[in-house]
Image (cartoon, rainbow, N blue to C red):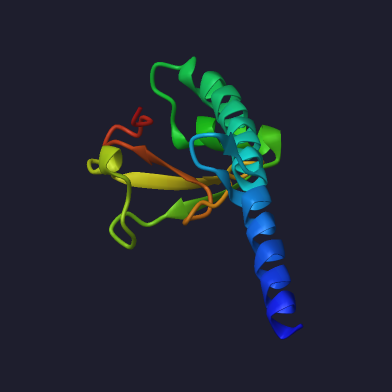
Length: 124
């Protein structure tokens, strides 16, 4: 009876893993589908935001803050040098962290960092 219960528990656990993770190369699991939907929602929000800001030749911090405020997103100032920035922002003099809604699923850091060059223009 003890072996039957152990086998049953292992079977149920294996079935649950297949549902959550899926079968590699055959079918994505529930976690992958949730992640993909979340990433798609984040991409759509970022594309809309970027489209509003990209219309300007030199988007300043004020333009970026206004676009984020219009969406109800939080914005915080990042002190350059106090934390590692993405490689594309290595020349940034100023930086802002935009807390995009919906956020990127499973992101290590909250929000998206936008950098500004010495002239105060958004680094694209």
